[in-house]
Each structure stands twice: as C-alpha cells, then as structure tokens.
Image (cartoon, rainbow, N blue to C red; front, top):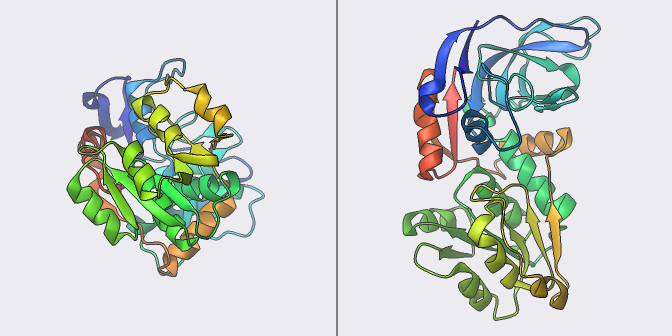
Length: 325
C-alpha cells in the first residue's frame, strides 16, 4: 500500500507519500480501506515533535479515519466486507496516529471493537469531520462540564473543528453560546453556526467582553483548549461556581494561574482526555439527522497533506481540513 509517512520530526518537508508495508491482521482485527482522514492539531504535534513525547519515525499519523471494511481477522463477527465505518482511534494499544500507526494510508488495521457504522446519509468526507472533533466536544460539555439548559457557554478557539462542534452542541443543549475567534469574518460565520454572541479577540479583550455580555454575572462554562495567555483571562469570565473545561493547549501548556479566582469564586477546572465509542456514534447519528452540521474548510488529496498542515498552523481554518484518498 501507499501511506503518508512522517520520515522524521520537523517541518512539512518531512512528509512523503510512498510505499509502506500492508498492515498484518491479527485475531479480532478488521482491515479498513481508508477513504478519508480528518486533519487535527495532533497530526501537527506528532509531525513537529512534542517535548517529552518522542515518536519513532518513520511514522503514519491520522486518527479521524473513515473507510470501508476490506477484510476480517480471525474471530471477528458482526461486520462484513464493504460496510462503511468510522474509527475510534483510542485503541488498547494506544492512540492511532500518535502512539501507534495511524490512518493516513490506503489501509489501516483496527480492532473490531473500535469501529462505528457510518450512516448512509453521510458521505465519507463529511463523516471524517465528525469523530474526534464532535466526540471530544460531547464529552467535554456533557460528561465533564455538565452543561445545562439556559446556561452561558463561552467557547474559545471557536472557529476550529472542536470549537465549532462545541458551539453546535451548546445550541443543541439550549445553552446561550458566546463564541470567540480571531477575526471579524470568523465571528460572522460563527453567528451562522448559531452563536448567540461573538467576540473578535483580535480586536477586543475577550475576558472583559464576555463579562459584559453575561450582564457582569459571569459565564457558567468556559471551553479553553488553547491555554497560554488565554488561561487566566478565562478564569475571570466565570461566575461563582463556574466550570472551565480543557482538552488541550494549542497555544501553550505552561500557563500561569491566578489562584485567587479559583478559591474566591469556587471555580472548577476540569480536564477531558478523549471520548467513548458512543460519543462518536451519537455524533454521527446527529450529523446524519442534520442536527449537527460539520463544516469542511477544505478537502485535499492526501498527497497535498503538507498544504493541510500549513493551513492548520496558520490558523486560517474555519472548520475541518479533510484529506481524501
């Protein structure tokens, strides 16, 4: 088969579309013929290299995998060749595309327990925009932050894949959503996604503006997966008893915390790492029903993955970049 290989960690020049050995099926595995892969910041981090997290290269990244069943390993039941599937990449061996070989290849080996059927109403490209982004958002908002009807939700980085998913899930739950992004154009598009209020943090102090928009009462929940300089200002936006939930730190993990806000306002800081198979299945069902609407920024041939990496790194993306095989 052919695969998009990270030859060594560093720049996009280290990505190569080349021959790679076919995966070897084991008992309990399914071979998936990959049709589309969503690109995530995780793919950027794996390609660049993360402190304290070495990746043995050459390596194949990619966790947002959609395709069709190509072959069944020994003992697999309940699946048939040709069925369209999405993948839950957090396998018992490790995260596909991070700890073990991922899906930016013509074929991928996946435990049969980590497959979800793709509804007929979704095409492969749209389906590939769902699993990681929407499942991450669903777990953060509901399993962790316990978002409730009529609560105020502030989403930072709202123009990316996870951010848009949070905006859409927030509206589905009946929350009042404040979406923050880095340009006027992105803010206008977030209103189209259902955001009740928007903040252009390239022009405004998002913390002060969120406080104002909340009637100086504070918001109930903040989604912050950017970290860095946004961390302390996020705490300031919360009401007494408010919750901040995070699943990452795309702008920096070594953030200062003004602990006074934590104790005086009795804040909860909640981490969310991953999602369940049901989070993916439920998100796919809602997308198929039209209740969630994945946004594709661009679709590129997998051979042009370097351009997709550049788009994510430039933060020029609104929605999801999907690679087509």
